[in-house]
Image (cartoon, rainbow, N blue to C red):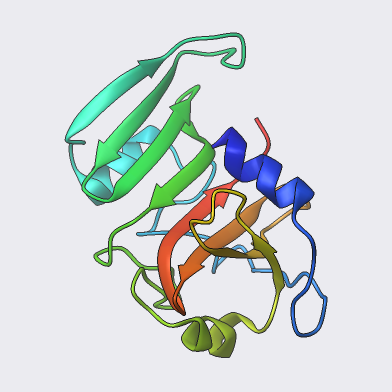
Length: 156
């Protein structure tokens, strides 16, 4: 999660129009879950997680957990989704129908061109869009023109 945020901060902007596009609040979700969703909503929408990991450390003011679902990782602190939702499965989609496995062309047709940065570990390119407020992002990791991961994130 912190690596993803550092990439966003350090990435060079080299998109076709060098513009960071914005995603509306209605669009900023994966599987109906967004940053700030209450734990009860996560459980109502997705059911019981496959596993739960308690997080410890100075970065967590409240009790924090990571909920693991097949192809979906959700960080929860203080009773709501906090910092990130990470999706690597085709079974979950954004409200606009973008999912893992879709082409970058479909991404552009729905959200337009956006800032692009090369991930430092050569996993692929990241396409990022500002979410509601100035401190949230929807991030798509793309390899060989296909989306391999979708993340919602905010600074810790």
